[in-house]
Length: 350
Image (cartoon, rainbow, N blue to C red; front, top):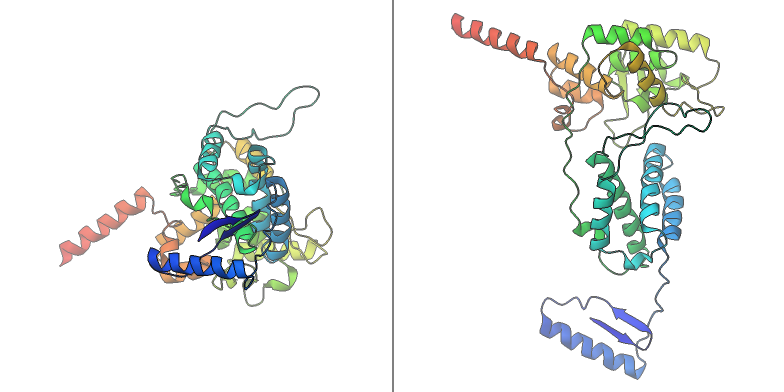
């Protein structure tokens, strides 16, 4: 039922499965309302978008204490949303406005990287359009915000983001470094990027997992790192170490005094990220552009080519499903040709 009584808006389910029964329930409710047998709850004030986002981020910071990267992602996504929606009342934002945001954001370009120029010179403008994944993360943040206020019964309508189709993403990342590229990159890398990259290439760990390694979680005698972080049980795992990985950790344990193997600017806290150092190193090394995360792809591909089965590979990567491993294991063309030659030899011997 959906009607107004003076300044109060009544909008609730009759819990009926057909219109005739629903109409009977509504008439009975109106009668009881007129008799004073039922009352009306005053509608909660709907905040404007800026205030709503502030409240949501405060809640998110508390809710995701165990996963600070999730909170940081929402903070990053909130900035363009705030620029576009400004102080619009939250209940005035519908699918049409969100579609306009999609169009507006999809035409924008990425911020240019590198250091800020000195003096009055402006930072060069990047001509590369934002990736669909970036826009989708922002839409996901907006959807979570609406869900938060729907649960609080501040917003009574359905989530408008649910009626908006997300952009198609190309998540098939196939960038895998060869041995020569790896050598050039590591030689050009400064610390701590060199050690972080080495550990990723030797263990397949995620960048944030490496950055958050703590002294008490390193067991060189038994040859593993314990990763206590992650959203799933599979992500919280023991990670076997190679000789190269053990060597890097041994040197850092001897050199670093605190609990964090890769300490950040804030005392007692780990380094957050090394993206700027990675971008500069790729440029210096002359290696074709790749993301830091591609070092994890490289490890997974090499492991698959070495014959590690998918179940074991999923466990080592910290995935709960084998299907997720397929995104990381990318056999090279050379490996595929070798596989075909093996098949041909097998058939010839049969």
